[in-house]
Image 1 (tube, rainbow, N blue to C red):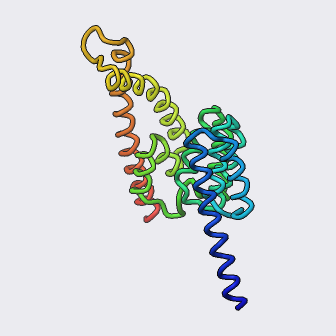
Image 2: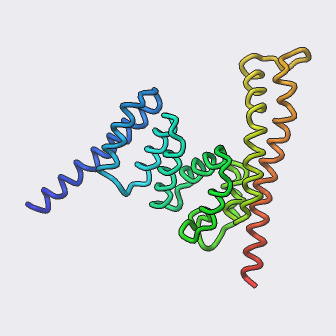
Length: 217
């Protein structure tokens, strides 16, 4: 009977955790941040070692404009699960947005944060996949911190005019001569971003493969 009672309590706990996950996500989606925050706090009480709970906490803090606290939440999510690529990307993007390159480099080189490299043995396919998520992440995975930061900053700079141009084309239909100036200024940004994106993937894959070849000798 005790075993059945314990199993029943565990099922109730799991159901409640699932419900709170949904409440937080709905609150974020519909801008009900107070509701999302309250549910997120309950979630952390029930599942303090859940990487998803801490990542959602970071999402709520980010939506509230608490960027440094959000960074800490994403970092905690990575402490729990080193393979949490979404939390890694969010943490890296916030660090780059702050321009806090020294802090990012210190975290990346800390032996306790090997999660940024995904594993002790690096895989070229993983490096390429991370650069496919956003330029520069594959280079960070390979340990090329300076290059990764430069690629990511360049991508951010190019992405803004590129997105504006695409929005003008898709929503305004103004790609013809005489159209919006945003379109004409945005085309070079689109082309450069695509080239940077493709090169980042190739460079991450090639570098990781070269590192594996050297390490195997």
